[in-house]
Every structure is written in C-alpha cells, then in structure tokens.
Image (cartoon, rainbow, N blue to C red; front, side, top):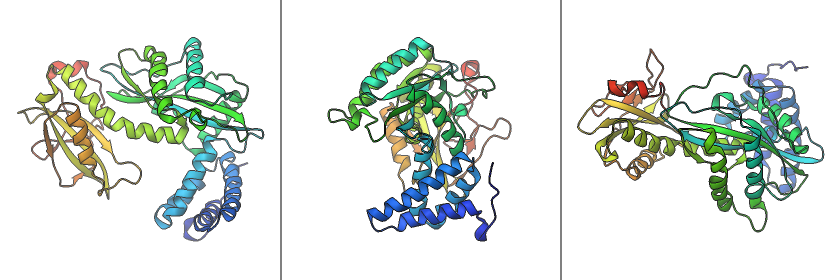
Length: 389
C-alpha cells in the first residue's frame, strides 16, 4: 500500500526529508567506511520507495537539494538512477542492469517505432554478447524500437520495467512488448529510437566487454556501430542512422541527448541540401541564445544565402551543468562549418523562449534579429515532416 506522506517543515514530506538527510550524510562523509554505511542506508530506503511508487517524494528530495546542497543532489540523483535501472531490491543472486542502445536517425519520411522481428533480435543478441557484454552475461532484449514517447516515465516506472526485463534476462529470454495503447510518435526530421535490454550476471561479475582485460569502450563502440547498425538499418527504411554505445539506461539516454545535438544539425544541412537542391555553401545559419529565467537553449535558423526567409530551424538544448558560461555557440558553429556552411551569423542578445501559438513549433532567429516561424518554400512543403527538431 502506498504510504501517506506527512508534511514537515520546509514543505518536505517524511520520506523526502529522510532522503535529504541520508544524501547529506553521504555527501559530507570523510571516509570510505562511512560512505559504505550511508550507501547501505540510502540504497535500502530507495529500494522501498521505488517499490512503493513514491515518485513524488523522490522528486521533492531532488528539487530541495538541487539549489540547497549540490553535492548531496549529485549523490542522491546517482543513487536513484542506479537503484532504478538495476531494480536493485528485486534480485538476490544476480546483478541486473537495464541498458539502452540509442539509434540516431533522420529522414524526410516518418521514422518508425516498430516491433523487432525475432530473427533480427537473434542477430542483435549475437553482436551484443560478442562486442558489448562480458563473457557469459545473460541477456533479454525487448522486441520493440522505442521512441522517446514510449520510454518509461519516471524513476519508479523505470525500476518496474527493469525488474520485468531483468527477470527475463536471468532466464536468458527476450521479452515481447505489448504495444496496444502506446502513444502515437510525433514526426520529426531527426529523432532517437531506443533498443532496450537487460543484462544479468552472477553478483559481482563483469557486465560489459570493456571490464575485461582485452576489451575497451572504443572497440565496443566501433564494432556495435558496424555490426549492430547492419542489423538495425533495415528496420528504419529511408533513414540515415548512427548508433550510440549501449550503456546503462540513464547514461545511454544522456549520451543520446548529447550526441543528438550535432547529429540534428548535420541532418538539417543534409536535408536542406536535398530538399532545396542547393549545396551547403549556399545556406546561411543564424545562431541565437534563448532564455527563460536562465539560458535554456540555442536555436539555429537556416536561410538560403542572400535571403532573409527562415526555411528551417534546429534546437540545441543546454544539458547537465551547461549554462551561459559554456561556449555552446562555438560548438554549433564548428558543426556547421564541418557540414559545409561558411555564412554563419551570431546574435548575442537574449531572445525569449517563444513557440508558435497555433502549432507549438519553436520560433527561430532570422538574420534581421527577429524570431519567426520556419517556413519551407511552398513547393517543398508537402515533402517536409510536420515538426522539426
């Protein structure tokens, strides 16, 4: 039964207050032996709250620590993620972890989110076990390519999914996903799809190939891109794809978010070159910062050279600890130049975080210093995805 949360001082409930106390204790610890004590207490408490679906208490504790105690926030966030993706309280004899293998894709057509046939699952299993996982690791693959809209929502849902898929991994069996009732996937020019799996090993054993003496992350990444890409590409017809290294769920999601930013810029340049039948050198990009209370993201408006009409746009969100001191604009410019653009305009005044009132699309910067709706020329409109990253 879900516990009743008693409100205490500062607006925190009893559970959130306990989590804050434990996280502060771990952050202030001055020895490894004290670390172990706080980690045991925090891990046990989190396992209970994840099982009891106390999502609100977890978020309340994180929100409180985010501004009050940054070190304790980092400790608690790491612990919540690790306990959730490992369904840590559910397995007595095995270490289990939910992993994600993100796939970056772009297309002028709809990017599928679809069931993975059993023959493809079998091939993916071979390549994951050969190149990504440690010898003898047991594996369960979910038979669906998830869009971001389909992923578990929140820590408690992630823990429940990890438990379900982890149970299959202990038996070395794949898992059929019931797709009935799944939300419809929005259509974007570039987007991410996720192959989800769980890995099980005897407690304390290596999970990944790079934990073994003759393995490395770089080798695993390259082999997975080649071998895994050959398996997955037929599931994404009409798409250009790039694979991100499979890792534990939350780390892989962050890697996908980071890698998707330059990928979406390159995809936009390639798309415009095809749709407008013009070389990249004939395009212009306008880079500008967009603010709410703080700097939230950069947006890039694309025009054809010598025209002020913004035909396309892309969003570059700030991630993690990035802020207005991070030189994101220079990173964006470097990607644009690598993609063949030479005409790049920087606008440095603060634009409001505006969206179109009618369709919800972001407003993009124009060469004249205004925010406008991106509109392709009429003859290309029918071939363009409705929404664009």
